Image (cartoon, helix red, strand yellow):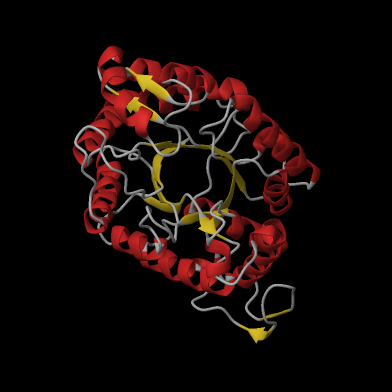
Length: 364
């Protein structure tokens, strides 16, 4: 079981001070948070990709390459790589380069993106979001697995005998998760390729994500990649921790009430009851996170959103200390003990390379 954090890289005013970090401060804070994640024993750091204010992570591979040089164990990932507005050729090249620099500690999450104005900035139409995601990923999948590719499609110029460089490390492409909040077509796509499916699992009730994950599992088995319960599932989540529950609620309330994404709507109590958001003690976070398995089955990756809504860096680092010391060891032990032997762990470069070697020996 992999545990980690994901960030959207928002620059948000702290409602308790009225101050917002500069872009420079926010970017540096994201790096510090990633380093802290490795320090406290987390497995994954994932950054979003955005090209509009108030977000700063417009170049995920640049940030992850910098973090790669300063870490040794952390898996570097994305919480969204825009498969719709990025050229698949550039994605293939950028992430293969990052894969080499990070000694294989790289995977990525494909997403369509939900910011309408970004599409025309990159010459695309948001109304074509699903077809773009399907066609672009089909090309990316080939670019990483075929040394020479000739291809034509609807949304970009044709390729004639093209070779993407560098080639994936050890001939093994980065593992891909397909992230979705609401699109069954993306769950279908993940199942077709035998890739991972990451349910955002924030803001919406569990029933919404159950339907997407169940569809993915059923189609994963349909396409012959394994049994439905062997499909590779990841979940998001949101937490705010303090040793005492009442302190967590008191401290987080002004951030919740004023957050751009969910402020001025349902109360904090309503939101924590109806969605995965957990605000409370380490034990409350443990209990609620363990319930995710009851709702979705055994899964392979759990990422938490912790640095949003204007929370200061000091507070986020304190959260990570609590998460790493009091929450993750218990969750790891409990969930690993419950997972049946036939359900795989999350893929890594090492496990994918081993599987490729076994497949090659069988073929020979």
